[in-house]
Structure formats: C-alpha cells, structure tokens
Image 1 (cartoon, rainbow, N blue to C red):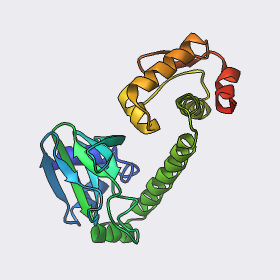
Image 2: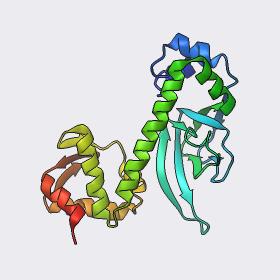
Image 3: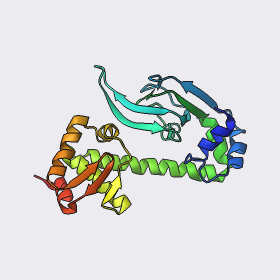
Image 4: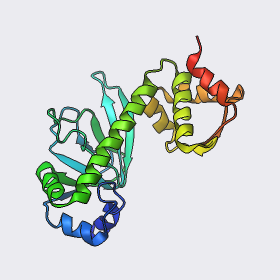
Length: 229
C-alpha cells in the first residue's frame, strides 16, 4: 500500500482522527513503522505471544478468537480496516496477547512499536489525547460486554444487548453493527441458538428483525426478559 493510501486510512483511525493528513504524514515520518501483508487464514499473533507494538488494520479483516486445547475456539470479535489492536496491552505489566488473531481474508497491518508510540505522544498532544480516548472507550466497551455476558440465558443476553443499543441510539428501530455470526461470538452463544432465541422473541411480539435491522415492539416485555425467574 502506498504512503498516500496509508494516510487516507489513518485519517479515519481514532488515534489520528483529529489530525490533518499533513500532520499525520509529519508524525509517521518520525517513526519506524512497519507494514506487513498476510494471506487468508494466517495467524498473526497467538495467545501468549509478546506484544510490544500496536497494530492498525489498513485493509482486510482479522478475527480475534479464544482457542481451547481440544481444538475448539470462540470468536470474540472481528477487526476491519481502521481498527486498532494491542493498544490495551502494549503498556501493561503483562504485555502478552490474551487471544489469537487470524486473518479471514488477505490483510495489511501497520505496526507501531511501543517506543515510537511514546515518542509520538511526547511530541504531539493530539495523539496523546486520542490514545487516552481510545483506551477509555475500549474499557467502557469491555465493561458493557462483561455486563451482558453476566446474564445466564441466551434470551437475557440478547435482551441486554438490544436494550444497550436502544439506550445508545434512543430509537426503537436501529441497525445492529454486527452480522449474526459476529453477534453470536460477541454474546458467546452458538449461532443456531441465537437465531432460535431471536425467532422466539419475534413470535412473542417482543422484537421484530430483518437482516441487521432490529425493531423493539414491546419495550416492557424486553426488559422483563432480564428478570424472569
């Protein structure tokens, strides 16, 4: 990928979003960044590997998965162009990947080493503020997911997720930013079970849905799903 294309992608990345293209170019020219290209189904980091840099997906798609000894795995999330990974752990006391990253299609990733990140933050207040914002938003998202996963049944998890989206959007009809497969991974439930549960909630007149669009039909009944005995 040419440098002009890299700048175009980085201008949409949360770490650089408040900066002009010229400012982004000036800053990345100060560091020894690395761009790597991976083929489909290539592992770029395994759980337990050392993490001394952040990665930015320039193109393609990554799957973050938790793998188990018997060969099973659980999809945690997907990372598309513009997404950052490693930012939470690169400065932690235990700088190791907590899960495995694998490509789903041909993918390009830009890496910035820990030391270069520090130098960028020291020399540019915007990057420092953006980095803190990225970390804060990720913590909020993780807390939200932990809250959803604390529920036991699939119906409770689905209801909790839809209610959180409703609170954020203030609308009864909205698009879920995840495919059915991604949502199943996010909620840590089997995809067929998720489809059955959502179908049941639709039959009961609680929600309606088509593809990624969800409509809340009965807000009270949706909340009641969280408190069934």
